[in-house]
Image (cartoon, rainbow, N blue to C red; front, side, top):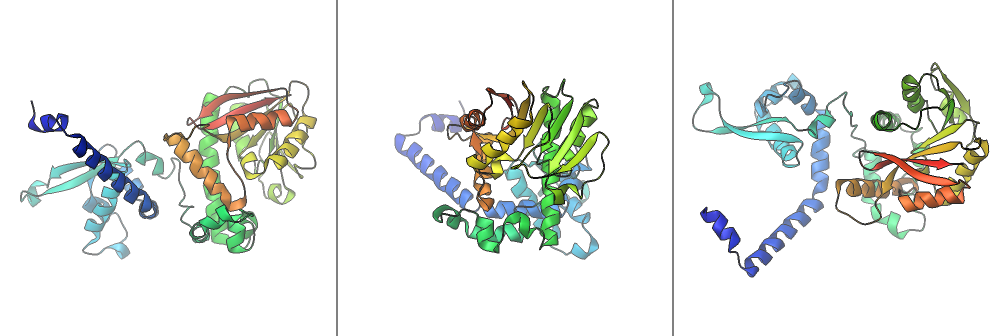
Length: 368
């Protein structure tokens, strides 16, 4: 028997308590310093490090190889060492696979170096994949994060408005950099989510006209009608939004106010709309949708679903993070039961979760 295994099996209760205590302290320290990882991840994205490593395919590369890919203006004698420290952090969070190998023959002196390749998680940060945009570290949001406790203790929880003097969407008109970053991030998330939904959800079959309520410039509908060309799409949003939308075959852009009326269709989709509004306002919109649907018509509500129990799963962590993010403009995420309550209180006859993308993004059907 291995001596180490034997020692592990014969640990005293006191030793196990000490191990638990040490682990708890380290976990607390890691969480308290999580802003550092976020900053490091954003730096890796901005420096295109994931792209450089991806270009090597399955081959593991050294920090010095990655460093040489950076522009000449970035080169200095300590660059490889600093890149290695950054890559090592990413590897500790499972974004990279790290191997320790002896240095190449011409450099062989008994020393070793770390070599890196993308993990399945790391591949999501390659340009053209999910194309994550470093939106959460933008100065406009960082100023809000610093004042996060105000969203808890003040009656008005619109944190962004409190910090910047205006709602987030209005602020976008005053800051072109933020507007560009925000729009790109939302477009990327939208594309990623709708692509997955179209792979697993069959509820678009048989629909003749679908209305995307709060559909922006029509990106969701463009992806839907590309797969289902027999469907006529109606992209419905505020007039100032749809006036900037490009013409898309099979899609009509209509401007209006969803709290006043909604265009008619035999099905509707509300994607990432309800989490922006209170229950009262959600019910107002859903009732307008109900009025414009035929008998047996349905609304497809696409939102992240908060688990009922507070579990330490990846889904629960992410949705709970989004829920706290919504303090920025007084929105919230909801549980399945809360969505069912919205459905019933809006006059619909039945509710079901048709499927879940990424285990957390629910496609819910509210049927008339």
